[in-house]
Structure formats: C-alpha cells, structure tokens
Image 1 (cartoon, helix red, strand yellow):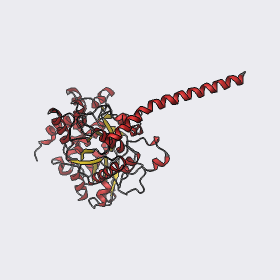
Image 2 (cartoon, helix red, strand yellow):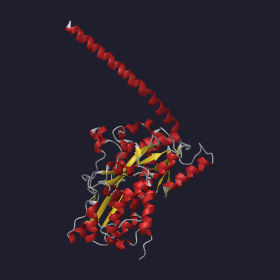
Image 3 (spheres, one colour):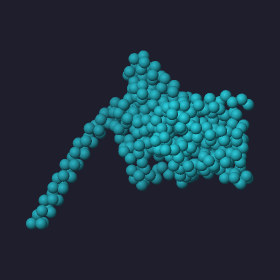
Image 4 (cartoon, one colour):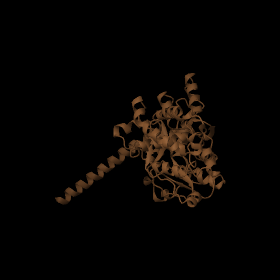
Length: 420
C-alpha cells in the first residue's frame, strides 16, 4: 500500500511539474513573440543615438557597436556627438512643444541625473519598455536597486542601464616617494595631505561635472554622522531647512581646505582635463576623475608620467549608473530598443569594461553568468597606472539631482566672487 501511495505522489509531482513548465512556457511565449516582432520592425531602421562625443575611446567603442548591430540585426546606428546632453533634451522639448509626437530626430539618448529627471517630469520619455529587453534580466534588477533608480529618482522602465562610473583619484608615486608622503585615503586625510603639500591639489569650479562630484563626495562623507532622517534629505529635493542642516559641514571643511589648494583656492580650473594637464606638468601631485579608464590612456599618450597610480578613497566613492533612454516622439523606437538591448549584452558589456576599450564598469550581475562568461570581464593585463582590480571602496549614491543647482549657486555666492 505504501508503495502505491509513493507512486501516486511521484505521479502527481510529475503532473504538477508539467503544469508549471507549461505555465512558464505560456508566459514566456508572448514575451518572445513580442521581442521577435520588435526585431522584425527594427531591421533596416536608422537609429540616431545622441551621445556625448568628447572621448575618442568612447567614440571608437560606439563605432564597434554600430558595426555589430548592423551585422546582427540590420540596424544602422548613427552616433550624433553631443557636447552637452542638455542640447538633446532641448531638441526633444522643442519638437514635442511644436506637436511633433512621432517624427523626432532623437531615437536613443545617453543620459542620467538631472537631464533624466527633467525629461521624466515633462513626460518626454517612452514609458515601460525596458523590462521587455531580454538582456535587462542580466542586471538582476530585483536585487540591484541601482538598475532602476537614477540619482534617487525611479526610472519606471524609461531607462536601460548601460554602465557604472565612480570617483577615482590618482597621484604621482615618484613625488610621494621623494617626499616620503603617502596619498590620502579619506576626505579628512586629504585635508591633512593638502596642508602638508600646499598648492598640490585642486578641484574644478562648479557647475563643472567633476567639481560638483568632488563637492557631493565631501557633502556625503561630512554628513554621515547626522541623524538618519537628516542624512536622508540628501536624497530628496532640497529645502531651506535641509540646505541649512547639510551644507554647513561642507562650508566648514572647504574653508579649511581652500588656503592649501593650488593658487590658494583663489582660482579654480574649468574641468577635469585641466586638472589632468596640471598633474602632467607636475604642478599638481594629486588629481581625480569620474572615468578611471582615462588615466592609463593619458599615461600611454604621454599626457601623464608613467609613475602615476590610481586609487579609491577608503571612506567611499561617489558612484552612479548611466543609462540610455528613448524620447516619447522617437521615430525609430524598435531599432532603439534593439540597440539598447545589445548595449546590455554580455559581449558588449565585457568589451566595454576592458581598460583598453573603455574601462566602463559593467551593469550586469556577474553571478548570473556562467564561469566562462565571467572570464570575459577580466582584463588580460593590468596597466600599472590603472585602478587595481582589488581596490575596494564603499559606493556612495548620488544625492537628488536638484542638489547640483543648490551646490553650484551656494558655492558661487560663498567662493566665486572672492578678490585676489
């Protein structure tokens, strides 16, 4: 009798498994059919990808992407090089305001932060399309909130993650050896290092992106001891009260730091390229970038000395995810989705992470990949000046995008008009 019961239970389990498998297949089939329809619609489309064009390395990578999507999917990709992402935002806004809801020139846009928040708030973006991309699941969005949040603003399926960036510092190891001084590993150590090495460090003037990034890194670190409800205000639109509570520690820190900056903090460079040039000329001994891959390339181009070394601050690195999005009035939406999906493919992400190609960190959850696929993300050789693979630093999420304007205006009032 017992044997008969076991046989019946096993048979029922088999039936249940069959039903579950059929249900799963039934759910997957429409998604597969919908994606196949997107692939069919995309073939022979010309997709105009509006993306920053200021880096030859990134431009070469996008040329490779264009070759791949043309061969694999019959999509012709045109990289429209931007100086400022806001130029494309203004174009979409002007088109939609004029009633152009289906013939827009921008099919795909590289974006994050304030530009995304502005477009989302103005209903300028195609909604709820990212979950339809097969490769989006490889980012493990259920376990990785960074894939669905942009500077604290929910993406709501309007952006597909493309890469990660983090604030990375670099220094001249020959100078450190000659002066027997180690580079700083925390914000407070940076202050002490600057006092001991006056004129050897600076940051770029806001609203430059890199200068603002340094201010936001300091703003987060200096407020980490605040009450949790006060600290959380960094990730909400600023108010008069939160500005008073959170900015005071920053001004106190900068008041101490500025006299020991390059030119005593009376003059600030305009961008990160200027910082890198001053380090290359040995005027500065310490610099920073939001693109760690820039450093080995600059050394190879003789823009920086071979003694340069990269490192991450131990108290944290300001980090963010950058995305691609589709405007609501894009003319070639199917082709744009196919390109966005390929940008998240294992092949494209692994190539992009190689320092020799771009060095942009992947958005994929490598634990979901097979061992041989994970090996594709390991660099064959580590450049001496590159950020070590073993470098560890807590990830500091970007504050709410409206803090950018607050920081810029308050910094200008406090430091921008100082006389010589």
